[in-house]
Length: 176
Image 1 (cartoon, rainbow, N blue to C red):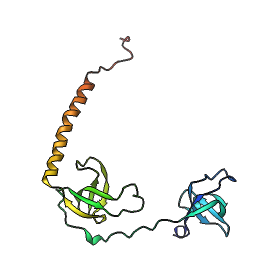
Image 2: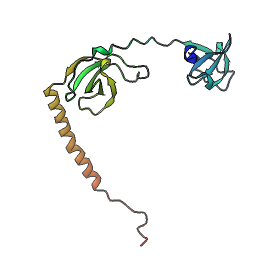
Image 3: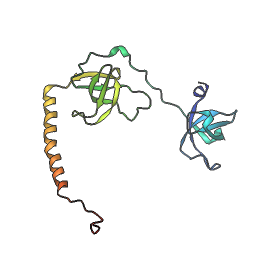
Image 4: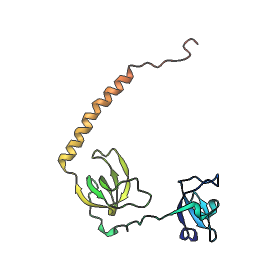
């Protein structure tokens, strides 16, 4: 616990005096006296690479993370239906999942999250209280989804037929 309390992050601004650090790279920094930091690539003080002068680093302030929405804001959703909803929050570490509208397949207090209506591009399984503006995907949209599946099936069959025309060659045909 004490390690996390004293944890800083900084970018190396001068690596000319060392072969261990890379200029422009972000490191975890732990106090090492009044003028030095123990420098690590990991958030553990005991995994440090060495002790370096503070002047080699520019401290990076962590962005303030908004508070998690309350869990009591979960609407009652039918798990047999598909919903469109807006992702308004996610935990640290999920920054690659952009805030915006996704398609959900509810499963209790969580939902499987997809980028597309066809439920082909899964993003993950997230708690429902991270979402707002739920709306059921109506029957017309479901019919369009089925039409997309029907048009994709013949194309796949044509691709399979194309590959069936090739014959596997063997290297050792002369051996009997």
